[in-house]
Amino acid sequence: MPCIRPFLAVAQTTLTDPDTKERYPFDGLFAGRNIPAGGFLGFYNGNFKDGTYRGKGAYTFQLSDMYVMPKPDRRTGTVSSAEYPLAMCNEPPPGTTANVVQRELSTARHVIPQLPAKTGIAALGFYVCRDIRAGE
Image (cartoon, rainbow, N blue to C red):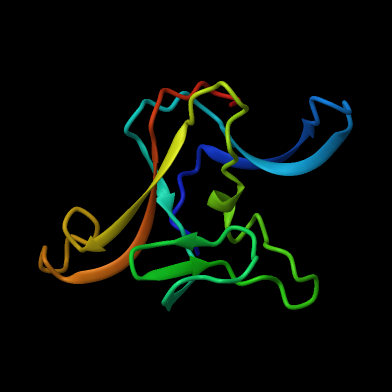
Protein backbone atom coordinates (compact mmCIF):
# COMPACT_ATOMS: atom_id res chain seq x y z
CA MET A 1 0.00 0.00 0.00
CA PRO A 2 1.34 3.47 -0.78
CA CYS A 3 2.82 5.68 1.90
CA ILE A 4 0.43 8.62 1.80
CA ARG A 5 -1.06 10.97 4.33
CA PRO A 6 -4.72 10.49 5.36
CA PHE A 7 -5.52 14.17 4.74
CA LEU A 8 -5.17 13.75 0.96
CA ALA A 9 -8.03 12.63 -1.27
CA VAL A 10 -8.40 11.91 -4.96
CA ALA A 11 -11.49 13.50 -6.49
CA GLN A 12 -12.69 14.21 -10.00
CA THR A 13 -12.40 17.75 -11.27
CA THR A 14 -12.30 19.41 -14.68
CA LEU A 15 -9.72 21.23 -16.75
CA THR A 16 -10.91 23.96 -19.13
CA ASP A 17 -9.11 24.61 -22.42
CA PRO A 18 -8.51 28.40 -22.41
CA ASP A 19 -8.93 28.63 -26.20
CA THR A 20 -11.92 26.40 -26.88
CA LYS A 21 -13.49 26.54 -23.40
CA GLU A 22 -13.98 22.77 -23.70
CA ARG A 23 -13.95 21.00 -20.32
CA TYR A 24 -12.11 17.75 -19.63
CA PRO A 25 -12.73 15.60 -16.52
CA PHE A 26 -9.75 14.13 -14.67
CA ASP A 27 -8.72 12.97 -11.22
CA GLY A 28 -6.81 15.36 -9.00
CA LEU A 29 -5.25 15.11 -5.56
CA PHE A 30 -6.76 17.50 -3.00
CA ALA A 31 -5.71 18.56 0.50
CA GLY A 32 -8.20 17.95 3.31
CA ARG A 33 -6.43 20.46 5.55
CA ASN A 34 -3.81 23.20 5.24
CA ILE A 35 -0.34 21.79 4.53
CA PRO A 36 2.72 23.97 5.21
CA ALA A 37 5.60 24.32 2.75
CA GLY A 38 8.18 21.58 3.27
CA GLY A 39 5.59 18.98 4.34
CA PHE A 40 6.04 15.39 3.18
CA LEU A 41 3.16 13.92 1.16
CA GLY A 42 4.44 10.40 0.63
CA PHE A 43 6.52 8.06 -1.50
CA TYR A 44 5.67 7.32 -5.10
CA ASN A 45 5.07 3.60 -5.57
CA GLY A 46 5.71 1.78 -8.78
CA ASN A 47 8.10 -0.42 -10.67
CA PHE A 48 11.69 0.84 -10.65
CA LYS A 49 13.66 -0.08 -13.78
CA ASP A 50 17.26 0.65 -14.74
CA GLY A 51 17.99 2.91 -17.68
CA THR A 52 16.28 5.76 -19.48
CA TYR A 53 12.56 5.72 -20.10
CA ARG A 54 11.70 5.85 -23.81
CA GLY A 55 7.98 5.11 -23.67
CA LYS A 56 4.89 7.24 -23.48
CA GLY A 57 3.32 5.94 -20.26
CA ALA A 58 1.51 8.36 -18.00
CA TYR A 59 2.86 9.11 -14.54
CA THR A 60 6.39 7.83 -15.27
CA PHE A 61 9.22 9.66 -13.51
CA GLN A 62 12.84 9.61 -14.71
CA LEU A 63 15.42 9.46 -11.94
CA SER A 64 19.24 9.68 -12.26
CA ASP A 65 19.86 6.23 -13.65
CA MET A 66 16.44 4.58 -13.57
CA TYR A 67 12.77 5.35 -13.89
CA VAL A 68 9.68 4.51 -11.90
CA MET A 69 6.28 3.86 -13.40
CA PRO A 70 2.98 2.69 -11.94
CA LYS A 71 1.62 -0.67 -12.94
CA PRO A 72 -1.62 -0.17 -14.89
CA ASP A 73 -4.70 -2.26 -14.15
CA ARG A 74 -4.58 -5.40 -16.34
CA ARG A 75 -8.24 -5.14 -17.31
CA THR A 76 -8.53 -1.43 -18.08
CA GLY A 77 -4.92 -0.41 -18.80
CA THR A 78 -5.37 2.67 -16.61
CA VAL A 79 -3.57 3.81 -13.47
CA SER A 80 -5.67 3.40 -10.33
CA SER A 81 -5.93 6.56 -8.28
CA ALA A 82 -6.50 4.33 -5.23
CA GLU A 83 -3.14 2.60 -5.68
CA TYR A 84 -1.16 5.58 -7.00
CA PRO A 85 -2.77 8.71 -5.51
CA LEU A 86 0.39 10.79 -5.83
CA ALA A 87 0.20 10.27 -9.60
CA MET A 88 -2.81 12.56 -9.40
CA CYS A 89 -0.67 15.57 -8.38
CA ASN A 90 -1.24 17.90 -11.30
CA GLU A 91 0.73 20.64 -12.95
CA PRO A 92 -0.32 24.10 -11.77
CA PRO A 93 -2.10 26.44 -14.19
CA PRO A 94 0.20 28.69 -16.27
CA GLY A 95 1.43 31.69 -14.31
CA THR A 96 1.03 30.02 -10.90
CA THR A 97 3.55 28.46 -8.55
CA ALA A 98 3.88 24.69 -8.32
CA ASN A 99 2.69 23.27 -5.02
CA VAL A 100 4.48 19.90 -5.03
CA VAL A 101 8.03 18.90 -5.89
CA GLN A 102 9.41 15.39 -6.35
CA ARG A 103 12.75 14.49 -4.80
CA GLU A 104 14.87 11.49 -5.68
CA LEU A 105 16.18 9.74 -2.58
CA SER A 106 19.21 7.51 -3.08
CA THR A 107 20.27 6.72 0.50
CA ALA A 108 18.32 5.58 3.56
CA ARG A 109 19.29 8.68 5.54
CA HIS A 110 16.09 10.36 6.85
CA VAL A 111 13.91 7.76 5.06
CA ILE A 112 14.33 4.34 6.70
CA PRO A 113 15.64 4.78 10.25
CA GLN A 114 16.25 1.04 10.73
CA LEU A 115 18.93 0.99 7.99
CA PRO A 116 22.42 2.50 8.17
CA ALA A 117 22.27 6.09 6.83
CA LYS A 118 24.42 5.38 3.74
CA THR A 119 22.46 2.32 2.59
CA GLY A 120 21.54 2.75 -1.06
CA ILE A 121 17.84 2.94 -1.90
CA ALA A 122 15.69 4.01 -4.84
CA ALA A 123 12.76 6.16 -3.76
CA LEU A 124 10.82 9.14 -5.02
CA GLY A 125 9.38 11.41 -2.35
CA PHE A 126 6.74 14.11 -2.86
CA TYR A 127 7.14 17.31 -0.82
CA VAL A 128 5.09 20.49 -0.57
CA CYS A 129 7.02 23.49 -1.95
CA ARG A 130 4.53 26.20 -0.96
CA ASP A 131 1.72 26.43 1.57
CA ILE A 132 -1.36 24.54 0.32
CA ARG A 133 -4.82 25.49 1.55
CA ALA A 134 -7.46 22.87 2.35
CA GLY A 135 -9.39 22.09 -0.82
CA GLU A 136 -6.48 22.80 -3.21
